Length: 180
Length: 180
Image 1 (cartoon, rainbow over the protein chains, first blue to last red):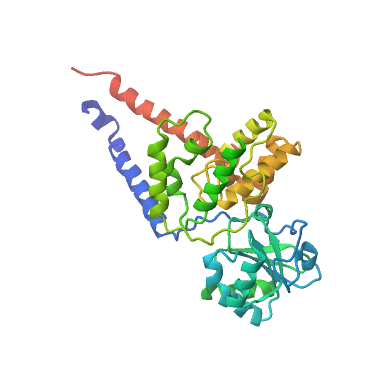
Image 2: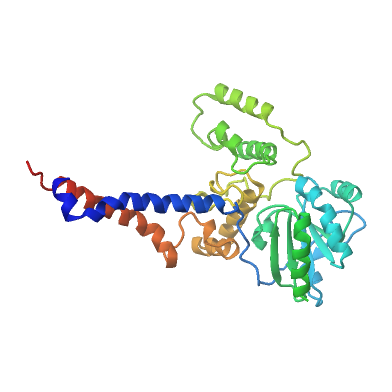
């Protein structure tokens, strides 16, 4: 340290600076709300071509052609086995009442379970197709529930990951209106 | 091989609905060591016991995930060369739900769907680049454990070298001359 102190006195501050920088980054990371979702890169792209049979009796199946008549809609991906899907049911009902037509895909599901789910939690859906998760990979989607907003030309304009909470309803409605 | 795949499928069905991300339980029981490693298991009894204990303790909902995973999710391809390619790809692709794991390691339903997609595309004759590209189009570079070294990603590859160089520089100063 004999020669060092005179030759490069500034160097002594370097570890502290590095420490302060890292500490700052950690603090920043702590204040940043946690978001570990991987978002779909399919926003702005047309829906892939698909055609799925009805997920349960009494309600029609779903194909990508059901999204191309000029009317923006929502596409909800759920499963009767998924707990957050039950939690978001009232919010889907609100969106439905506000005039949104919602189509759905029931993932890895059985007709009788879908019927029970609809009976217990209400049915805001116009059509429900039955698919497996391979369809979600095509959408760049990562789990259930998820809700996509699709414009009148069948293009994906927004992806909502996770259950819709009361505070999300207004924002989703705004985005749906913007897709008109 | 068939039996192994079925066993793995059955176990996935049980482990799938775990409410947390990352599959801690899966790590505990060394699922792959039991089910997919062709070498004989060193202590089947001990691991079986651990598995039983873990399963007994975990609150697994009974009516979770209906329906089987997509057909090629847990079934090896008949052509060993193709399966080897699939394996190499799957070890390099990130599970979208439990992001520290590759889709080869993960029991998440979406990882099963991605494995199915990889194998289907290999059978269809796509190249490794095409398959990774197809998934990147949907999930972004994040899906790839070896992101392409372009743009800001270069920093990922260069930072270790830069730091090492800096460390050598510091070390050199210390080791050079020693005034008596």
